[in-house]
Image 1 (cartoon, rainbow, N blue to C red):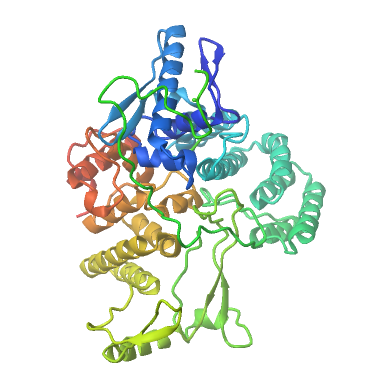
Image 2 (cartoon, rainbow, N blue to C red; image 1 turned 180 degrees about the vertical axis):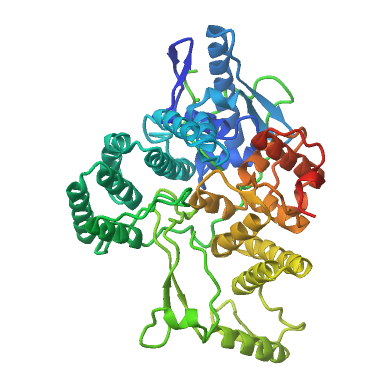
Length: 561
């Protein structure tokens, strides 16, 4: 999956077919041993422009992939991989470790496990990074493939940063110096690489070279982006100048921040449907799936990477924190969120951008006024609509106009729940979480593209307080949480919060989701109502036992009283 797609068996490289066929196989490999709905496969392979009869073409590709896997099994008697059709979709039944992508994920999870020793973590991360042989799904077309590439590039950057931090703690700065320069040249705008290189150079007595690197980075950022280095790099520069570096934190929460200029991003047209159309199932009852079906570009002649951003702290008007925030001449607070890059799932293939958020000190007052004035005005609202001549006309509604759900209201509920939880008022905090989650569910159903991204940070913080953590970077996690149509993460996250569980020891969310989807007869949920609580309990319990090597049989034993 890293680099161009390749299938090898018994040392031989097999013909993987056309780019479309490779995309079909990749779409199954990414979710190995988990059912992938036919509509999801169609979306991944053709984006929003499927052929006239997409299922027939898809079945043809699947038949040829089956023959490819059978050929691979013939060459290697000990390894089998097959495609099965289940009620929830198609499943690639194969050991995930047979693919470099899933081996990378497993090793990166081991490297991120703080329960392990630093030497074990460094070795796991180094092995994971050694699997990289190029951009995932290289040469494959489409938005989905581009999103996979972006996601795994970010995973690679995060793994490099984690590996270098651990090696510096272990006292191996020379190893960092030998490895990072090439990566820094490949990703010239990833500041943590430069930070780690400067630390390593200073540790080996090469402080002058560290200062030279800072000067080069500062000039590069100024020339390409018209900006300065971030605060961490600037602070390190000052420390090197004075010869007194502060010790690196034991386990810093650092993601590979890529500084990129804000740029307009393409958006789907207003008429584009988010949900894939449901085409009639044309597959035969059993056996081969229409191997002679036409392709999107005519007859098929001839015979196969991974997953599915600034947290705000509420600031009260008039407080000491508010007075320290930079303001514009109009009194508006100009605040920058965290430096974690964000990814827009509907604008894949473009680099992440730094999020700049603007808050007004008067927002609280306006919200209060709105809460009082708007309900009183509802009864006299007149609704304007366009008639057939495109002229505006007014109509009086026969029923009161409902107030649309508000992202700001959901954020406020999540913030209230956090304050109540910190104050030891657990029951009130859970009540606020329930209200926040229900509003979040309504908002992402109403407009996921607009409403999900600003709420993802609040959901992540709420999950963290519930004892749910993540083996991937927050930037990657956010891409999953803003895709309620294509991934189960929003639905499962909502159910975890609604249940009010507080885990004594953290469990990875992505492991919970993986365990849930592997349960027999389970369809990957896209709505919280579809999440089966008993299966979720078992998935969480399995995730904890796997992570900590325990054999707990009752989820209640894992929960705080």
